[in-house]
Image (cartoon, rainbow, N blue to C red; front, side, top):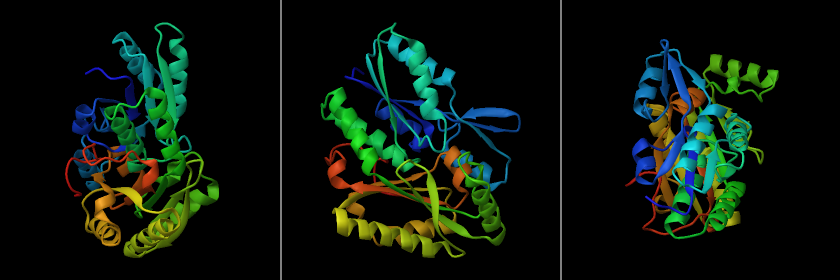
Length: 308
């Protein structure tokens, strides 16, 4: 399929392989290692497979895409005649994918001629997925590369991301965390406390609330979105679940009951890397004032039909 520009993202965007293929998006995957085997997240290991491994307590580790991974991807696109690439990456405060993509783009030099622009979403999961989806929408609508890229970057600047992590969370593994934050995370895990995280303007998560009943945090998420709606106008939102646990479904239902489904891009199953980071039962919501998202009913959502 010929497009005015190509779209590349890492697998932290939490979209399915079928979605990427249907919308002609190239994925540079995180890798999941377990039992001496390494699999490409989403491409080889579906979200359901990854969540099953987490449910079974299988030891996992996550490897971010390397400079070489991105270089191979960009080189292939250049050889196919692609001249412009919008590369969407998860928050640089949590992972090295933005840096790796930039270094890979620089390593290509001027030959073959290809322009690669990196978008730091300052979010993860459906936050990143919404920006990928927006680029797909503007490309389908016929916007040029510069205009589509500017639209995606403005969306990233105004996007809000909230995440409820389970007591099994692995956020303490994030390199930007202080010793006190790591200690608090382990303490909450021992006590079985759920945490609500909000992403700041730099894309770093900060814990804003905790509770032993996750429904309290789900209600708080809905209230925060409602307050922003009153200040900024109608919001478009998308959510993710990590595993179909009772807790995750309860969180989804609590938020969905308070927000307009008509303005939802859908709720997705998290990828393996997000399941590893947020813990089984986790739930997240990304939202943005509708004026920053390219809206048209006939354009793709994060999932084809209704929410899970």
